[in-house]
Image (cartoon, rainbow, N blue to C red; front, top):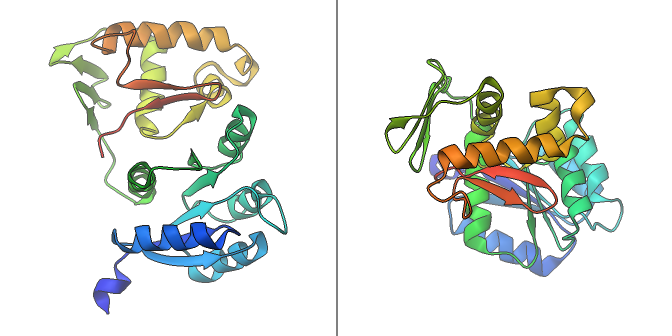
Length: 232
């Protein structure tokens, strides 16, 4: 009983019964308890009553758009939300992330990738001791000392480069949209200045990637934004 109670609860909001079954089997085989909702309203009620640890949300629901569900959830909950949708347009991905989704995966999907994204989302949601040193691959960032090392060697960054990297570290594993990054690093008046971002991403890759032309740490989500890879 206690073992079941300790499993994270995943709420699946999707009107396709086959998808819900597939997700339930996958989740329950990997240490989750799965609950289901076939409509947006049912999903909102389930989220309020069951308080899941993570939500997997489809955008194409029969009673309301998934964006509406996301907005309702974000009015009172910070539960991690992973959007799982057949919609693969850049505008939909950006809109979901800007509305508060933690990640976006398109159908058809790899269950291994989905589980990895869920682990990252859950890790970020858990209250943990304040992170002072972040490591992924050959990158190490000491946030207290403001020191950056790659392959064990200290890397000198400008103030803006460091602010950009710190933002990625604070949201490692999560897609950040162009607008989110520009707003946080350059301010609200710079949200359309994507050329700033391209230039500084190139600078960071020159300093932190073994091969800047084939980045392994700071990945581009085409038309959407960027993600700092987090070891899972």
